[in-house]
Image 1 (tube, rainbow over the protein chains, first blue to last red):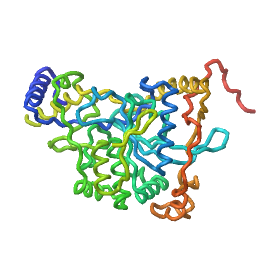
Image 2 (cartoon, each protein chain N blue to C red):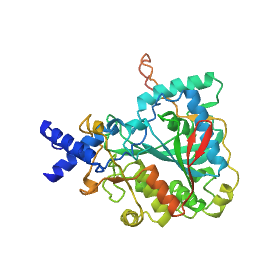
Image 3 (spheres, one colour):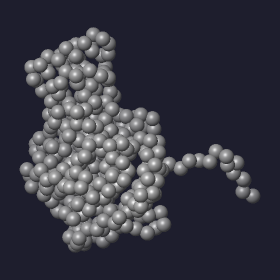
Image 4 (tube, helix red, strand yellow):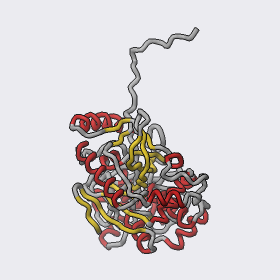
Length: 280
Length: 113
């Protein structure tokens, strides 16, 4: 918060209260990404079985690359309209054991922000990990899955294989990054940018942003609960410059799924649960 | 002043909504501890765990390669022939290796002669 102090805080709370009472949507969002640390929601055994269940489900559906979301926070701690806090590409590929032998499974391609120690929380980096870690960090039963049209899968794999997807990474991180502006990026916007690069077959970032402004409908998150206006009053990862004074619009599981489904780029969107798969 | 209120409001609402502590980073030291404990439990329960697994780069794995080039969209026919085949998933639970603990008791490295 650039203007700190009790006066500013009170004004903010009062304004927030008024907007909540009036039902005026207050924009917020979260594209938080990462966390290799487990959430304690699943035991290791449960996370192992569940992650393998999802891998097999994806493989059975022929998903060479899929988009998977999780939330590391329970839903009561998320703003309305936000179901998940992190999304990543899951890629079916060969994995090597330390002895050089190999096996088949999925690898997750993540954008994480810094931990504030080795890297600033306002910066991000790309990292590969595995489904166990992804699932073990979930704080709820379900994960969101988007399956993609084969041609889009092929193009995405090409971008990953030749490394050009890394060119689309903007290290300046914001939890509420606007998909229509190039100043900040979070995990969901990164995935959208990579998808856009595959769709329009360009890595020209200005062109990608122009295309997204024309075709992508972002999520406007509404916060109506007064209680949510209390708490820590500042977070360096929350930036609003890229929203240019307009309501905060960001990329979520829902808006990404809508974009991909409505334009024929996705074949299926569903939520998983341990022991079953829920379509929806 | 208006923009001041707006920015302040957004920050306070966002922070209070739980986002300030969202699961948005990779905590390496905690992950190492979790990973070590998790892998021990999984192994004890008979699950096949592969510690220190590494993804074979896509371009070299054969799954996406065989295109004779690396530029985007050069990977076409061969890739899709492979992709259309049933995908398999092995039993291994792949896990990154925990951070190594350096042995503090080790003496100085002897200088090579």
